[in-house]
Every structure is written in C-alpha cells, then in structure tokens.
Length: 66
Image 1 (cartoon, rainbow, N blue to C red):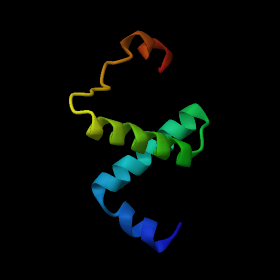
Image 2: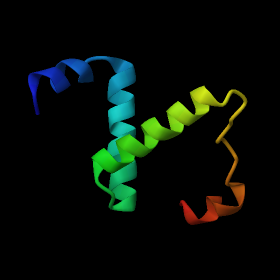
Image 3: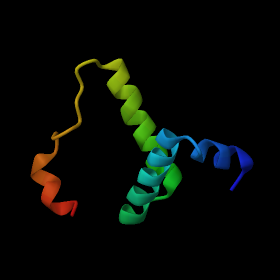
Image 4: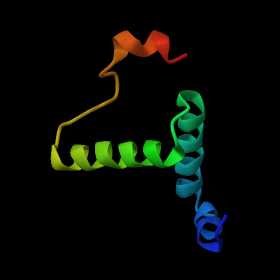
C-alpha cells in the first residue's frame, strides 16, 4: 500500500468508502477497481441528474443480496 493511500485511509470518510468497496468486491468477486469505477459512474450520473435516487430502486432484488 502506498504512503498516499495510507494517508488517505486516516480520513474517516475515505476509510469507510474504501472498506465498503472492498466488501462489495469480496461479495461479488469483482475487482475493487471495477467496483470503484462503477460507484464513481453512478455518483456522476446522480450529480448530473438531480432527483435521481438509487435507494430502494431495486427493492424486488433485495432478497438476492443477502
């Protein structure tokens, strides 16, 4: 791990995000970089489309995520 990443992990919001990406990658067997890029794409889409809300958008699939 680089010094830059170690320094960033000292920031609570970055560590939480990093840990979440690692969890999603572990559950999906996707590469962490893939998860990160997808998360950034969704975030950019949400910023460019005010009113977009992903929470509960896939409630019918929730049973498969456990």
